[in-house]
Length: 186
Image 1 (cartoon, one colour):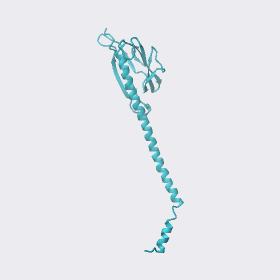
Image 2: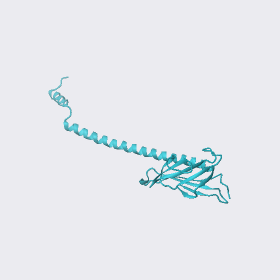
Image 3: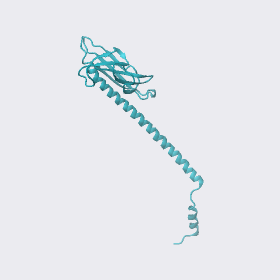
């Protein structure tokens, strides 16, 4: 089968490649697509980082509340009374976290809408202690009610956690009323 001269000319003409205008157009479209994909991947990565930070702070709040609950259950006294940003606990003789008579302090430190909860062995608490919770939105997290004739002493704890309080999202709140089992009814 022989090729006609017309078909041969057409095939030869198609071998010359792309024009500069076609190449620039394709590169422009490629840049637009790659930019859109990059923005989508960056947004996904930032969302994942925020979700991980939120999850970690909520888990840390649960762990801190659990440790505080164990220490309060075996405490012989807590000071001060009323609402406070810090408490000092004198542990009883059966406390697994420390020996009898050990003093442990829990306090919040920060300003505005970002506070952290610290635990320190000793009568005074500061930021040199172990940071138990970060991203608290309130500094006053403790309310201590001394024992009465009808009830044991109770420490109310409220841990409002929010990694981005300016976003308008609600706080993740952990609350508990913990009784001092070693307190005596008067």
